[in-house]
Length: 255
Image (cartoon, rainbow, N blue to C red):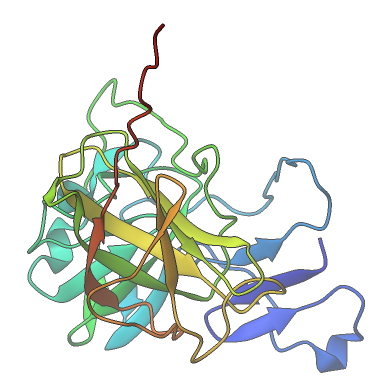
């Protein structure tokens, strides 16, 4: 790896200690680690055990926070102590909005994962206890064909139609950077519903501030009814996409 990003600092092993603003790592906080190789690696964290019920202070605005319980819990259950105090939660590639379950893609929180939460005001997060036999799941896997996550993203969602009809399940929606790289993608599960889709930027080949978003539906270019430029705001933006597919008829000539 060559960088570690925390909410308030950066650590690069190639730099002298005096140049790094991230000095320590703490339980209950979340971090991005930039892995330099082309294959996955395993991270083993060493340190003192922390009680999963330890209160995590959250300030108003965006917080990068870690998941302390040793089991997987539904998002609403895991965040019961701050219910009604936050707008939405992001994982590495998914989003949960308590006021919009139709478009939410983050269903559960899992050990070893980090998250972002937008708090309306300061609060204290206390995780509930795990029930006996509660499952432990890895929630950090990126779906095949999806864009590689970065810490810089916005989120799009809304309606997608094909020839004026709700796009069927299995329809693939992609967001394309000017370089041709896929900056975000989603496969429709419920007809016509484009759920929360992270659109990444800030990295070479991906979107930069102010660049217009381009879309493809099932590999064909489609213009959004509401043009949208990429901004690293982690906010939710509604769009509408309609693919007009013209069927081709080849005449049969017989003798």
